[in-house]
Length: 205
Image (cartoon, one colour):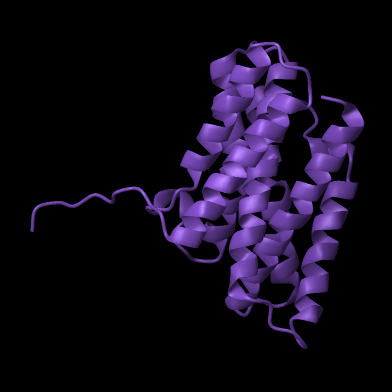
C-alpha cells in the first residue's frame, strides 16, 4: 500500500476510534484526563497490539507521535463539546464501525507487506480492528463488544479474508483494501441497523 495512503488511513482510523473512546468515557462521567486517556488508548490500541505481535520496532505512534497527539486532541475536543451538545448514541456505534473497517485494513495490509503468511494477515487484521475497542470497554467497565453476541469481530474477519484473498489473486492496490474494508464496515452497519447478531450460548436451566 502507498505510504501516504496508509498514513491517511491510519490517521482517519485513529480519529474515529478516538471519538468512540471519548464518548464511552463521557458516558461514565470521566474527567478531562480520563476522557483523553480512553481516546488515546482506543485510538492507537489496535495498531499497538499489531506492531508488538509482529515485532515492529518502534510501534507506530512512537516513531510518529502525531497519532497520539491527534487522539488526545479528539478526546479533549469531545470533552468540551459535550458541555453544550449531546452527541447521538448512534454516533458511538457508527464511529466504532468505521474504525473497525479502517484498522482491519491497516492490520492485514501491514502484515502482508512485512512478509507474513496469509493466515497471520487475517488474524492481525481482526486483532488490529478489535484491540482498541476491547481496551476501551474494559477501562470503562463494560462487557467488550467482541464478547457479546454482536456481529463485530465476525465483520472484521470477513473483511480480512476478502482483502487477503484478493491480494493473493493479484488485484492491483488499493482494490483489495477497499473491498475488504467496505465489506467489514457494511456488515457491521447492517448488524447495527437490523439488530443482527450471532446466537448466544444457552446452557441448561
